[in-house]
Image 1: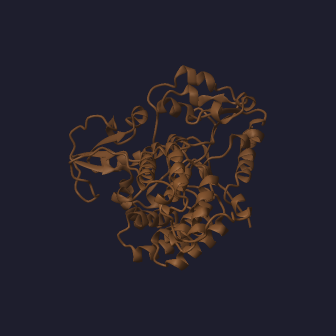
Image 2: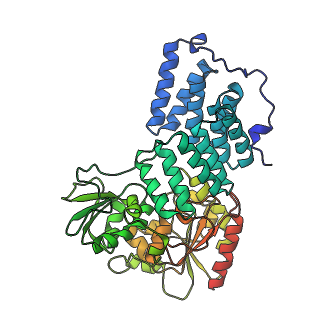
Image 3: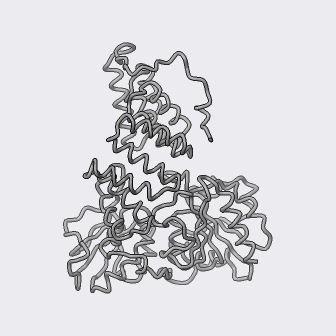
Length: 478
């Protein structure tokens, strides 16, 4: 069984393993400790975990046995993606406070995130033995089961947790995502309506006074405002539903992030499109973007997977020059998402793994990377093997034109995948072993996009077999 390095070191004999906390006043004044701790918590709340680490480290030096400050320090490390330090702190907490259910649950969470599922399972088993009603631990158990491939088991655990805490929006949301992944769409999408009130979920939307459309009220002749709420890819994926609203007689006004306005304003069914944060035009109803599957009682059979986005105008000359119609197969690559995404560590892979692919003769490779850039992700010698198309595309309209000129898109689960699917580009979507719920679990096809093939990891963090499959498919293009 794989073991993280921290579990291979001898325990520190000088550290207490008792559950009794020493008062901060034993080493410094309570006022000084409290000020540092509160400052650290405030920085974490403001998404400034990097600044919180030295502050909380100072607080911890004053009170090494304080549970809360050590837990917040671990949380800051986790937010920064510094998993080794997060694990060290969570393991220390579980060692110092062996009778706390939450200590073992938190340790299980970080172990699972790092891929040590067997050890995570042992830690969560200890947590639930200490407190069988700990719903946060039950949530962690469900996540561990998903990471082990047991999504049905995860669904049952969420159901059990909801019997203990029926008003938990976070549990309802997680339960819903699991049901959608298992193919139980209407029930799952309905449960996902709890996302707006779930702790830790960031919904980006304008505040409106108009009534919310529930899918039942007549919208014939009415203006319905579709409100962007989460990622760029979500807006690209769900703008397709504007047609369904327009078919009911609605004037559809889409609100989306500024980079998408130029492209999505031309989506079928969209009457008008404005950027989030600009003045709200008159409207009769609003509906959050990700609520449309629920309002429309979406089933897989309702999706035809056909392309629905056509960029306006002609392909810009500088894009056409980079992608000439000269008979050379062109493959667009996107292997890294936004590093601030909560699941980026699983969904993205190192550019170094592209080395065997980029040496295939007779193929033109272009990179669709925007954040991070190609220069940030690849050594200079590898950069020379592909064209930086992401840098050349100034906006989503230009990116969409580029998608329509390539022979194949190879991408991880980012907005690039949705843009490729929505414009009809043949696409290989490289998915982690524990995929996002919308891609379901086993199929190589998806009802969302007809020209997309799903390539799944056989086990967690195993990208090599996926890229070997990509290489064979790219070689066949020649």
